[in-house]
Length: 174
Image 1 (cartoon, one colour):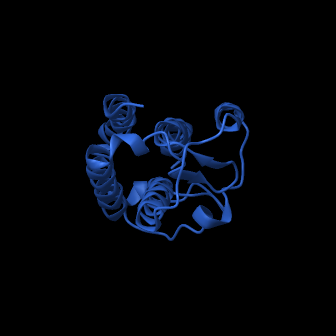
Image 2 (image 1 turned 90 degrees about the horizontal axis):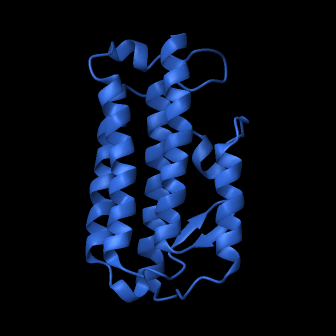
């Protein structure tokens, strides 16, 4: 697997993030930190959730590299990614896995900065990783298991797109 392919996928994911941030540019910060209802996340919380999820993926990558306990993913990873992407694509509301579900109330600016910071760390990791490791099980989804880095970035992009729709709905509601 090539670094160029990994960085191309990451670039697409980053463009999606920039589109979201551009859409929110100039919006009232108080509005972005307002929940549309009971048990519903504000836009700032959705962005924080995305940052937390991506921080978890990066932490897993770093842990696996540090422990030197990783290897090529199996064929089942393609099937699991397919099913995971369908689940996220469907217009069904899911409860977030517990590890990324506890999202504190925060300001939009704090959430935006946190998301930007994790993306910079991801870019650095993906730019410097040994290319022979790109096909290894260095990304783990809390429910669907381990994937290689390109599969992980593809899922994270789908995850961002899923929440982009939620952000747009919330923006109309608050």
